[in-house]
Every structure is written in structure tokens, then in C-alpha cells.
Length: 281
Ligand SMILES: Nc1nc2c(ncn2[C@@H]2O[C@H](COP(=O)(O)OP(=O)(O)OP(=O)(O)O)[C@@H](O)[C@H]2O)c(=O)[nH]1
Ligand SMILES: [Mg+2]
Image (tube, rainbow, N blue to C red; front, side, top):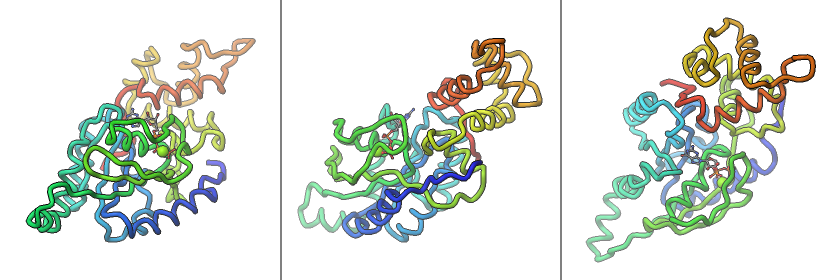
């Protein structure tokens, strides 16, 4: 991986704001990507949140492999983490949010109900890596498109409070990464799934690495999507076959690596290569 700066100043500012706003919320909802539940877990958020009540959502479960996502939920649950599999486009899993909060705060809420309170308003902060679906989640919970969303990282620039239908006020925050990734695999996983700005990446290197990974773990998906009969041991050869299939060639019949890289990354991100989990517990 080229040395790139994926932790610009505004992320440092967001980190500070998360810390400050922790005092005014009951709980934190951390959104992770179901395709990469390990790589999308920000260790700094762990540190900042400490003992604050937290729910973890594995979002974009429509893009991951169902049985692997279930394995992750089971693993997290066995560690006493409140984890829910969700799809913020359809709203799948979101009806579990309020009951889960009520369960965490059962004693407090029981007391309030005894005092005659019918509606218990809660405040939560929504955090996570860029592009993971934080704003989409809040909009779905509010049944209203208040927060701006987009299919690239860095859409939310400032924090914003939004009231949702489940008597929860939610603080939307800009996505944050952390200054130093543990290993190259984490960096690649975040880049494949669109958490790191493409402009600061070498897209050709990224696409090559994605093909390499897919042909190791999901060869049949590659064969089917790109109508290739045999997968060559060398990922570059596979990439070349895909490019020829897609007519991504420049004058003289050479491979147009720029174009085929964009095709592969876009199609992976849109789920067109199939339901793919890049990490297993
Ligand atoms: N397939 C799929 N796409 C989703 C899901 N949730 C959100 N998205 C898409 O993911 C992209 C990013 O969504 P946002 O809500 O803008 O993400 P964010 O976490 O607020 O991003 P930043 O504000 O940039 O940090 C958008 O194109 C959404 O439509 C989901 O469950 N499944
Ligand atoms: Mg956002």
C-alpha cells in the first residue's frame, strides 16, 4: 500500500467531538460493515467509548454472506456485546434497536415507568467508519431523509441531531478512521468496501488485490459474473481475462487497467459479484 493520509484533520476534530458528546447521550450506536466486521471496528472508538452503553450494528448485510454474518453476530453476542445484523436500505433489523436499548436500561426505565412516564426519550450518538451507512441508518429510523447520504466516504461534514420515530434522538457524526492500521489487510478491506477515499488510493493496485482475494475465496462468483471458465493462478491473468470479457482494451488490444479497475471495484461495492464476506470470525 502506498503511504497515504487517511486520517486528516477533520477526523481528529470528529474524534474530539465524539468524546465531548459522550456526556450528553445515553448510549452509542456503532455501525460496522457486515462484510468486514473486524476491519471496520475502530479501536479509537473502543477507547473513547469505554464503559458507555453500546450497540453494534453490522450494516450492509445485504452485501455480505448470510451465514458468515450470523457467525459474527454469535461471536459478538458470546462476548456479551449487543450486536444486531441490519440492512439500512430496507430497514431490516432496525425494529430491534429500541427493545435492545430498553433491555440495557431496564432498571432505569422500569423506575421511570413506575413513576408514570409513558414515553421515555433517549439520546444516542451514531458513530462509525466513513461510508458505512450512519446517515442512511438515521434517516431510516426517522422515516425521513434529513441527513445527507452518498456512496462515497466523507459525506457528513458536521454533527447533527435528528429525532427518530422510536423516541430516540440521534446524533449523526462524520465517519472516522484511525491513524495507523494494524496491517495491510485491514487497509485493503477498508479500501475495497469504500471507507477510504478512492482519490488517495492506487485503484489499479486495489483492483488487483481484490481479484486476488476473490479468486482465493470466491472463485465461482468471479467465474459467473465475468463468464470466465478457468481461474488462472496469477491474479493479473484473471484481471486480464475479465478486462477482455468486458472489452476494456485500448488501441492495439492492450488492457485498459484504469477502466477495468473501476469496473471491478464498482461492481464489488454494488454487490454485483455476489454476497461476499471478506472476514470470518
Ligand atoms: N447495500 C447497502 N447499502 C447501504 C446500506 N446502508 C447504507 N448504504 C449505502 O452506503 C452509502 C453510504 O451511506 P451514508 O449513510 O452516506 O454513510 P455514512 O456512514 O453516513 O458516511 P459518511 O457520512 O461519509 O461517514 C450510501 O450509498 C448508502 O445508500 C445497506 O444496508 N446496504
Ligand atoms: Mg453520513
